[in-house]
Image 1 (spheres, one colour):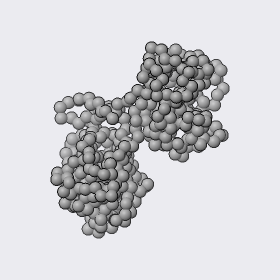
Image 2: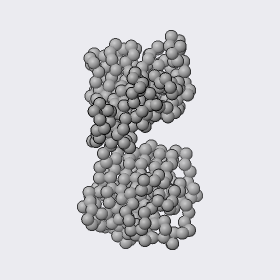
Image 3: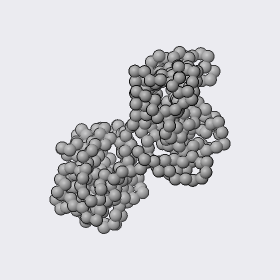
Image 4: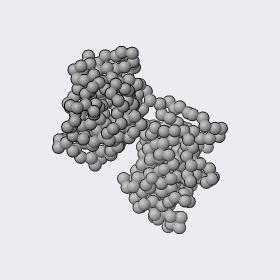
Length: 390
């Protein structure tokens, strides 16, 4: 994935902006399947014909940000399918985001969850943000894990975590919790125009290929860090293992295992750290190890202790999920929330802003370590400003 960098000033860390790729080439319906005869292309615009029905991307997507422009005809009814199969009703076998001329008299008596931007049958959208009929609208649909966010003309009109969502239309929605599927333009026989259909892939990607240390660096790396049986092994004698790539906002998932008395951590944007240590090691109890792993140990102003202790005993694998957005960090350890949206403070120069981008580091702290299944999902960065921690 290409990264675009905007320079703010010499010596200032810059956040990357993820680059979207077009899923409509402006000329043909290459890459699409379904009722392709129900659409035509004219001057870079994809136009649904009268009686045009559903078309779908040939590719499937799991986590993404889909942006597009659309223009409605009077009384038009359409939809956007996400994580949908190619067969069946996408509103139920997948998820449908409603596209509708809300002001049309014939739609005056619909249910709230049938108007524009609603997650059909699941949650109603905030109304009143469509441009006047005949004008172009810009919409963004972001899907990451269980979170679905819809932004229309700069206004967030729907934001839902579907993990605990229940249908409000009284019908079964077996596709609500699908993790992957096609994107669809769900024509209902009314002319609707689309252009600038772009997609940013936010799916998880391996940070470690399970075979080599490609993409990672460390002083005398191969003397102390190695790969065995799909795991990264550290002998306890070298320095941090550092990604060659920098990251801004992301979700990182990994598994780690430590030996008795072990101590490590995960640096975010090159900044220490999400703490990893052995809660049963009495020697480090004065420093807080008895409280457990997963907190931002170097914080001085915000909390540096976990909400609860969720560690497994030394010698067992732990699963850690780290989410970083702006300067704030959320950590789940073995499925338990241990750090909840806490600012990561710059270290050691606490008077400096937290870098807006930087590497991920696996901390070397004098004890053997084991890591596996490192996966990362990059979030879109809204801007490229350095993040202050105070």
